[in-house]
Image (cartoon, rainbow, N blue to C red; front, side, top):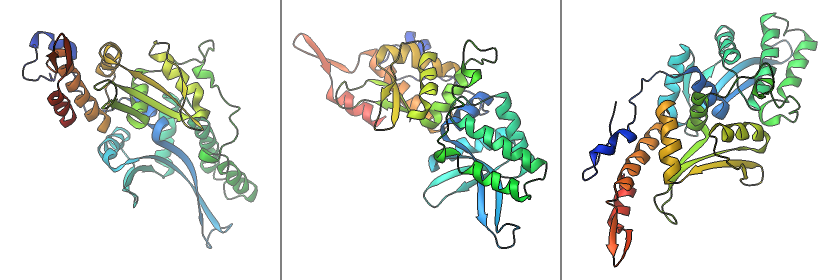
Length: 307
């Protein structure tokens, strides 16, 4: 166990802020949650005069993050035991799987640990095309055209969401699979924001999770997972978000969740820093007396911002 302590903070309460020094290995549900946030299942198309129909097509599984997510993607690579890491010109980094034999193993993972949002619909389309490749019928013209048609309705091009809600996300369905805490942490590692307020309500900390409006059902499910009666709020023209914040919720909900279902990657570092701040604020050493009132010491604010 790793204990974060600061000079002047009472040590008898340290156990409630204990942070696990977890193994580097990823849980499968975490990988699925991260994929839900940052992954994609695609049909690749490239003009090729040597190809039968003037175009070569293939399959690709990808997880994309900013360059500071490289270490996390290396963990994903280690989890699967295959795949390549590719740095892009725009500063992002990809974990890529393209060959069919390994994509079949990707298929096995997501069947056993299924996605829960709109990306599951892309996965189903991906599987239908994979089946065509396995049967080696993709060189037939009618099948080739069918694959192109499928590709034009996937990912950001998708307009058909009639497959939602998914049976395994419905509590009254026999195929229901409860949402898993490691999945939630994986999703937050990709698409969540751990924040510290530095203006109004200085020192307040929490989590914000945002998604496109099409994933309302998924965001509602994550909100319900925390059992706090959270509201799903509009965020921009086509986005929604949930927020979990405040001193009490940080102690009682957020910290407890990540202690049991750890983060990985840069969000893990952010969480450790915020937990250090939580320790500091809980000690009360950041307050000074002005008359009868206790106020925030300006030097304490600087200390927090420097963490």
